[in-house]
Image (cartoon, rainbow over all chains, first blue to last red; front, side):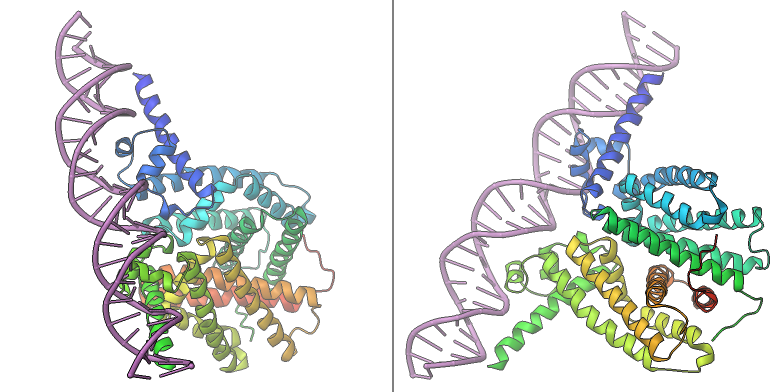
Amino acid sequence: MNNRQERKLQTRQSLMNAALQWVEEGQHFSSLSIREVAKRAGVVPTAFYRHFKDLDDLALNLVDELSLVLRQLMREVRQNRVNPQHIIRDSVQQYCQYVVTQRVFFMFMSQSMTGGSAVIRQAVRSELQYFAKELVADLQRFNLLPHLDANMMDVLAELTISVMAFATVQLLDLADGSSQARQDFENKLARQLQLIYVGAESWKREQEPR
Amino acid sequence: MNNRQERKLQTRQSLMNAALQWVEEGQHFSSLSIREVAKRAGVVPTAFYRHFKDLDDLALNLVDELSLVLRQLMREVRQNRVNPQHIIRDSVQQYCQYVVTQRVFFMFMSQSMTGGSAVIRQAVRSELQYFAKELVADLQRFNLLPHLDANMMDVLAELTISVMAFATVQLLDLADGSSQARQDFENKLARQLQLIYVGAESWKREQEPR
DNA sequence: TTTGTCTGTGTACAAGTGTGCACTATGTGA
DNA sequence: TCACATAGTGCACACTTGTACACAGACAAA
């Protein structure tokens, strides 16, 4: 009873890959058509409906699948604890490495953030919140910044994720350029994060500057 | 010699407005067709070519036009200098107000950042850099953070713009919700910026934390 | 072996798409 | 006043698009 389902999952994968291929070529997901994705998957248009209700449905499943991969990546980054003197710099470098090598994944996610339907945007947003929570957990686990209360911890984590997310978009645009530009970009990004964490260390309860 | 060009500019405007209307309805610009935009502008499809080469051309002009408006808005925000004790909080509030009232503008810009063709993304990016430069000029003019060198000043400004840009995307998604949620969001955003500027004040030359 | 269940095929059709071309009508400069 | 330039029209064409429907062939369970 296995072969049957296996085949089905295979063409389902083909359809999803075909969609990714589309955005990899610089096209926006919202300009993809059922016929086009079916053609690329080497399948007849109407077969699409055996797997997905419509393209939004496919996109949603794509977000789910890619989320799993991203979580795995992030776990690796978090476990590759290197010299604690350079956590920020090294983490930035590792992350940017992933963005470049797993380019399509991040392109699709970026597009979905501002592009997709409401449900899809919601899915991406909750994924980002998940990462923020993970970050909070890490900060607490290593007892960094113990003077910050829970609320400011959340603020800090979400800020970090925001900066990383926006940087990802910029990096994707930059990735065609020279590796020198990428190096400069990573340095700048690391500096920005350092700035934030200097702020977090200097933060005093009930502070209300300017 | 006036009436002729005036008419032309008028339908040109109609076409651009029709495109904006499309994204206002939650559609992505890249799924807009020439026929659709022409229909909405109350004009025959082929008339489109009297004004734009293709939809990318229209989008580019749209970015240019909206950039002008945005610069005007930012100038107002910068000149509405309120109580210097609450510059950040008040600026955030003003800006969010603009995002909500000029919703379409910001939706189109957000879409263009990750959506449009390479030239369009480039246009939006250079617009953001313009704002960063303005911010640097402001910081220097009022002699805030005099201990930061030119390089860190740029880093700080670009970080600020990044955070604001990403916050804009989030705010646009949130704007259908309650005003309570918006209030919370503004508070969080203000906190994040405060965190950054606490960091900037505490920053020491050649600092390399963690 | 038979039988029913599905995944994928093929055909079909109405609607939507980009764009070339000849046209009309109107405001402008001579 | 007249002739010209041109913004906008109408028609035409060859696609592409979503999706309904009947079908085929393979696999699983009987």
